[in-house]
Image (cartoon, rainbow, N blue to C red; front, side, top):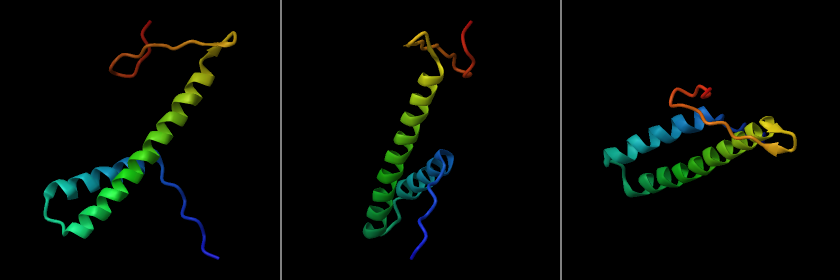
Length: 82
């Protein structure tokens, strides 16, 4: 029985996606390879979106106060506004 491939972290998936975009933007891939890379890129994009949605949900749960969610604004540096 084959072992399941371990899911990539968000950062690994994003790095692979960036590499695929660079390869596709170079424009020198054969059509079949470009299509394969594009399909992989779509899959990675979906994985990243799912990971971000999951992280957002966890943050909302952690920020829950008195039964309601309190959303806090963040500045560009990622620090909480006072």
